[in-house]
Structure formats: C-alpha cells, structure tokens
Length: 438
Image (tube, rainbow, N blue to C red; front, side, top):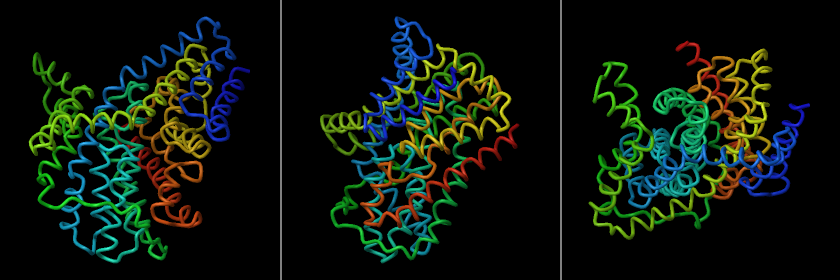
C-alpha cells in the first residue's frame, strides 16, 4: 500500500506539471504535503518535514548555484565566451570546425547554465554558418551536445550539484569522473552523430543573429580560459593533491577549506569580477547589475531544487525510503542502471532534466547505502538518464526548433536523438568506469 501511494504521488507530480501546467515548485510543494499525509506522517509534522527538506537542500546549494550563475553571466557579457570560440575555431581550422564548436560548448558550458549558454552560443554558430556556408544543424549539434552534457553531468549545474549533496558524494571526485564520462558522450552525440545530419535544411531566422563585439573589446585569451575553468581547476587540484602527497596539519586544513565548493566558487567569482570586469574598466555598478540579473535567472531553479528536497524529506520521514531500499536491494537491475532508468522515465514524462534528476534522487537515495553503489557514479548515472529523449514537453526542444527553424520531424531526428545518445552513452561510460574503479 505504501509503495502504491508513492507511485500515485509521483504520477500526480507528473500530471500537475505536464497536464496541469503548474509551476514545478508549487507542484513539488503540493505533492510533498499530500504525500506526507497519505503516508501516515502526523499532520502537525508534515509541514516540519517539508520545511526541513527545503532548508537542508537550499542550505548546501544556494551559494554554489548563485555564484555559478554570476560567473557565467560575467563570462557571457564580457565577451570571454566569444573569445574562446574564436581561438578554438582558428586552432582547429575550417575542416574540423565542428570539433572546435564542441570544445567551445564544453568549456563555456561548465560555468554557464544551459539556457544562458544556448542563447549565448547559438548566434555564434549562425555567424559561422554565414561565413563558411556549412549546414547549421551539422555545426550546431556538437556544441549543443557539449552544453547538454555539462548541464546534466557536471557541478556546479543545479541537478548534479544537488545530487552530490543528497548522496553524500564528493564534489571534486564527481567532477573528475564526470569529465571521463563526458568525453565519449560528447564525441558520439556531437561530431560523430552530426555527420548524419548534413542533409537537414535549416535557415536560421535573422532575429536570432546577435551582434558580436569587435576584437579590441574582447578580453585576452589566457584570461578568458582561466576565468571559465578556474572552478574546475580548483576542485580538481584539491581532489588530486591528497592522492599524490598526504597533507598534514595546517596544510590539510587549508586544502579542506579550499576544496569546499562554496569557497571555490567565491574565489572564482572574485577573479572573474576583477579580470573580466574591473580590470577592463567595467564599472562596479554595471557588474552588480549583471549579477542581479544572473540571480533572477536562477531563482526559479533554486525553488524547484528546494521543492524536490521537501518531497525527498517526506519520503525519508515516512519510512517509505527504507522500504524502497529494501526492495531495490534484491532487484535484478544494478543500482546504477536503476537510477538511470527512473530518471529517464521521469524525464520523458515531464520534460525537465533538472526535475527528473531531483525527483529520482528522493527515490534512489536510500538505495546507495543499502547496495554499496558509488554515490559519485550514481550522480552521473542519474544525470545521464535525466537527459533521455527530449521531446515536445521540453523547452529545450522548442528552443532548438525555433532557433534553427526546423520542422518537428527534423527536430526529433536531430535534437531528440542527440539527447538520447548522450543518455545511453553516458550510462555505458558510467558502468565501464564502475567496472574499472571497483
């Protein structure tokens, strides 16, 4: 009976968001309250469970997500993303231009949230289309595959960051594993798959063509790359250092302090503010206005993350999480595959990768200690599943369709299949990595 109630509550969440068109945060909140009552939590305790879930989830995430949004905004408005794109295109040459765009999407996608990265980088694709006369979809898919992978797999993006906290995973190790898993997913879903899309005709509307900054107004190459990659460098460095030399005393304390994601993001933001803003004579008032816009861009995402945390806490307090863990412990599917499958089903039903990942976290969290699954790899497995087959209920589907001026059929043939390849290859890479490290 308890599991039946849980399934009905999850179906209600799906219907409220997809059919009822309810805001995801409100849907999570309503379902969390209803689920708590239905699962037998005393009415006076249901709100406490919801509040605890909201607070615990946001407490560990709000700083990382907000600071990440600010860094991404500075990378965008300063012209750093444009400079990175130019450098890589010159380096790879016209013949391998799609590989350059893939790498641009990956580097710029690390600090940028997906929608911001999409809107920023797609006009760059169109400018190259005009210059070289290459097919727009063939050039665009490699870059957007890279953006999608960073969104689903890598902190500081909302879903993987939230999953790291909920599973007790290590942020730096998850990031390192994420890079390993990302490589085959991006290559196969990007340049390799794009070869089959050359025949798709696309004439991007002039509306979506952006004005690029002149060269003399762009930041220096080294500054652009360093500012974009600094969070990754700090997290990777503090994670790898103890593997080569065991720190002791004050050194160990400082490494622990510097490896905290909030500290990493704060250091990175301070550098980006100076190097991409103040050093180039951008006024502090202007910089703060950009940062305020960045916070507005992610405010709804923060609420959705908090709502998912409330539902997870209700599952935990009601005891249903323990029951699910007991059942899954004897399930025929490996836990990493199970996490991927649940996320994929919710993604196809609801459309949002972030909602799919966060909803799955509440279901799968108790499975990790019960089965001994690697929490870092579980983050990546669920991240891969949350990208499965984007279609008409996903805003990303419609953004791609409208920006590239495609039919629904061609959008499914290109965008939806690209996302599916990312999801499947991501799972296979996670399983292969699990076999190697365990």
